[in-house]
Length: 473
Image (cartoon, rainbow, N blue to C red; front, side, top):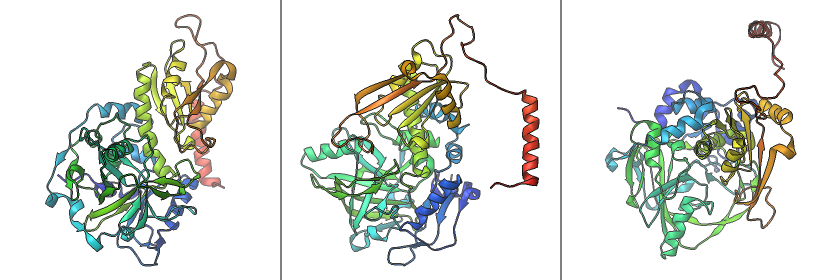
């Protein structure tokens, strides 16, 4: 059976892949394509065969981006029936975890080429400099893998790395992240922290590795549930079986995080759309790079749809689990790209009195969220015009909104005042009032509608006239 990997994804979705023939610089020009696509509402997978390095030479490693910019394509490759059901369907998928299997180095495509010594050079990777204020080229789709020294349980997460030299790069992990906890445990023992970064795989592997889990808990069996088959792992060259990496990835960077040593990192164009400030971060001393013979380099556009879609879908899974512990009335959750990672919309079916507020309070406990809105199931939570209509016609702010203060939040939130350690959050109940009698309609005005048959006929007439008599302006 052929391996499920990045190549199988590209082959199966060849009609969705755009391969520009132009030579495009890794500094800004490739990222600019993604911005143009976002503005046009068009999300092809982009495979740049001719990336130009900072010195003007052509890299022999193609650059792939926009792999997960389309929510519909992402849902398709994950085997979902509908992208709008990512939360409930993937929540169920997690419970069907499949344990990984180990393969030998000789059977692992990612170790076809092993680079040590002077051949181990980060600067040869076609990593991108995305935004004007970025200080250099960053790995943006590198899955950092560490392990808890107390239990041996591994963790993997996407965390940025600024290439500072042939064998050195900063490594920025949010302090509350599981990798940062593992790192601090090694440091507390007086040891450097072992780490490996893997780049490039099938979207089901990349996204499954971003599921929000308890600590410590490995992602590998969850990835198997997303793949519907065991993930193939291979011992890393530097760390052996202590850090396993996906055998069918494209590139792996291995090394150590020196104890208690920090260097400036950033500014960096963050997921919220602003250039974040310079921070102090640990760094990685690289010991080895392995890759496929004809490797493909994967990049996420930071702050662009490509990066937000998969992580937001994983947030929907996490929030759905939190919400269902409060009430079965929740049937869908959407974390919109427009709200970055700060907003969530919850759809409820006939909630009992108080349940809409209960579930809002529950999901607002999730660190990243700042605003949560609950609506009835007649509202399409994937249509922001519908959300705004519900907010404008079903909400009285004094009655239907509440604030929670002193909660933990994202340290990357650009609205935080200097020195703030906690955030304030808002819940908005945009569900209709409860009926006074069981089974009676809710006390609200009916929607303005036309008969279905008349509407269907009008849509057909409009579409036909539009295609013949006028075009989009």
